[in-house]
Image 1 (cartoon, helix red, strand yellow):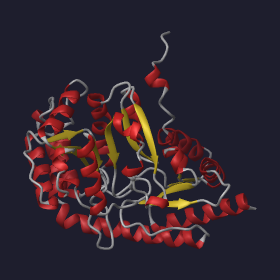
Image 2 (cartoon, one colour; image 1 turned 60 degrees about the vertical axis):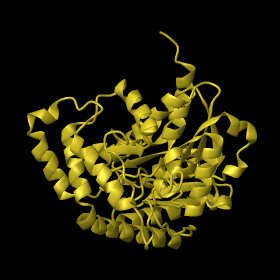
Image 3 (cartoon, one colour; image 1 turned 45 degrees about the vertical axis):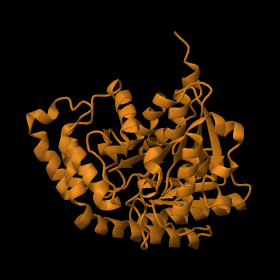
Image 4 (cartoon, one colour; image 1 turned 90 degrees about the vertical axis):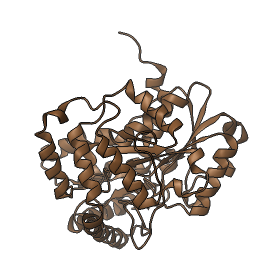
Length: 391
């Protein structure tokens, strides 16, 4: 048999992909499993979305290839959202491209820009698609550790000159997964100017723009002067509308960036199911009347999670965005060891910080994606594991 490519061999284990099998085994043994691992809510999608999918699935034309164009009305709805929500106008056919979830677009974009000898700056810890796209392009990932020292921001002034000279892409994600950090506008302006000065493409992952609390409103990168010259922004319906499995997203930006991604995709896929895109239109239409109630449910879960984990001795900050707690562990306790013991001894799945990059060591991520009662029970079990580990 042929050997694997060097690109393939460079890929790390994707821990989230291994968890469903482990979860299945635990359940088969009769364990009461509480899964707080993936950012995958147990709440339903908006009723209008389900109804729209049902209706569209009965239309024969919706079952044909969408190709890169997809359903024109979905493009138009996404562009209308960008204008209404962020005040930014985009041509739906030249400055916006539908995606089969933002993950695939983010990973595939690297194939158009990176090659051996190039570098991409990646927040560490971070969403593994940034790393995967970089490695599959045979480029070098420069992993910048995001820590409390910099408020979990990538400080571009600390990028070594030799790395900066080889960098073609900077990946940023605010509100941030996994740390739940948010980025001040003056910081975003600094990054945009830095990318313009050094001819670097800013890939801005804005999947959590609508998952915000306590009056915080996340911006689009395009609200920052100069961003259209350097940035491509990725959005998703997954988190906002409890539609993770529907795989619907889009990217917006200048035609030269959008067209580049669209060309790569033309060789890799033939578009998302058009009935799903029709349902996506209904999601946009549900933003004003349905989303506030959904955010209330997440806020209740967030508050329950913060209170429960604090009660068990963990230090927990109150996140202003996302569906995550980023929880530090006591010195000397490894995040993978904690994750494994929590899962195997207590049936609770929480994500080891190290699984999202070496920079995540010393933390674990809790997704507040289930009911407050189950979250509280998970915290009690985590507290028991912590006590056993610290002696």
